[in-house]
Every structure is written in C-alpha cells, then in structure tokens.
Image (cartoon, rainbow, N blue to C red):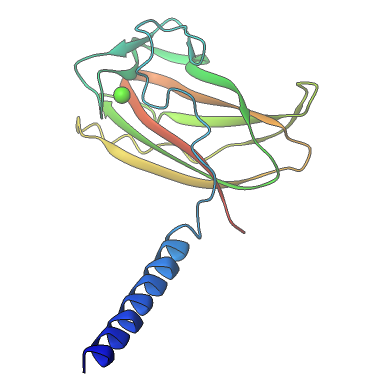
Length: 185
Ligand SMILES: [Ca+2]
C-alpha cells in the first residue's frame, strides 16, 4: 500500500512540475529580451543630462509626481511650443531586426496637445536607416498615471535605436518606468 501511494505521489509531483514548466514557457512567449532602456525609471542622477538620458531646456526630474521610485521625467512649458519641440532622449540602445514593444507610464496636466514619442533606427556607422512614429499619447489632463503600449518593427540594418519623449503645445507631462523589449514573431 505504501509503495502504491508513493508511486502515485511521484506521478502527481511530475505532472505538477511539467505543467508549471509549460506555464512559464507560455508566459514568456510574447516578450523575450530584457528591457534595453537604461535607467528606465529616471532614478540615476538628479539633473537633466546623465550618461543615459539627455534633456532640452524645459525638462527636469520631478520628485513629487512619479510613477515609482524617487523621480519621474517632467517636461513643462507655460508658453505654446511648436518647433523645435522639447525632448528627453536616450541614444545607443542595442536593437536588431524584429518586433519590439514599448511600454511607458505618463501623466498630463493642462496639455493643449498630445505628447508623443519617436524612434530613430541607426546602422553600425550611426547612419539613420528608419524610424517609428507611434500615435500621440492621449492627453487625459486628469493628473493620473496612464500606461501606453505600442508594437513596431525594426529593419534588418538597424543596430541601435534612439528614443525621444516629445512635448509640443503648453502644459506639463511626466514620463516614468519605460520598458522596451523584443517580441517573438
Ligand atoms: Ca521613477
């Protein structure tokens, strides 16, 4: 009797382990790479120009309104901005051919135009070989954090990408917790 129970026990444990393995494989099916954004939560340094992020005049790290950690990336203007726009940007993120998904958190207050983001793709020599222009981030102007997600394709000649977080119009936008990961086809 003891032997029967232990055999049943072993089979039960094996089935449980096999089903956990298949669950974790399914969970990782869509997103395979690690986040390629450095300092994705704007936590390193307190200025607008660090080794990872650069910012134009009008950018700052905010300690009051943030999605997580100590800081977020704020862009604000009390006059109407058209061209050039105001940008936070990060260059040199390693990338290769395939589909990528960006996810970021943003908050808007009194914005007159939707903030937006742009990707530039560059080859080994740093020459631009393409770009992706996701739709604008809907300006909710409700002082609450919203998640924005977008999937795009990267051309075969691209080796790095530059991400720009862009501001036009008037008001304030905050960005935080940015993730950029490769997806399985
Ligand atoms: Ca943060």
